[in-house]
Image (cartoon, rainbow, N blue to C red; front, side, top):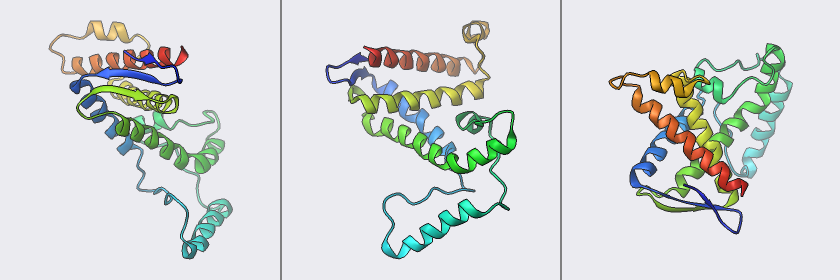
Length: 193
């Protein structure tokens, strides 16, 4: 599928259906990463009259020991996308999450946005720089994580797929998961060349 280019990028030709599928699948991942409890900070430089508010917010974040540290998200997909850094120490995990979760959410949404912006809705030839290709790789990984959690995919994916009844409504989703793995693997190989 993907082919490396001389300048360190990659190219791929995707059908309209494949493009639509990828575009459709990345949106729910991006939506899951929105957190109404902890809205994203405004992007771009602060206006002069807002700078005091920005500094006040930073001071509040770093000096409020009474505020509980954020916990692992309740949604299992979000928990997989934003795992605890310290699995055996909830206190350290919460402290780490407090300072890193919002930027990780934003980075993952950025990767998905890169995929959306560089993938023509009607499909066709896609040319990506090396950085864009790595963003695609990260976005594809997040889509596969979402599918894997929702489908309860295990390391025995091939056996799970083979065991599904042809009339099982999950069959199409399992096949999409397998296709995403092939796309991701192709991109990894193209980037390694």
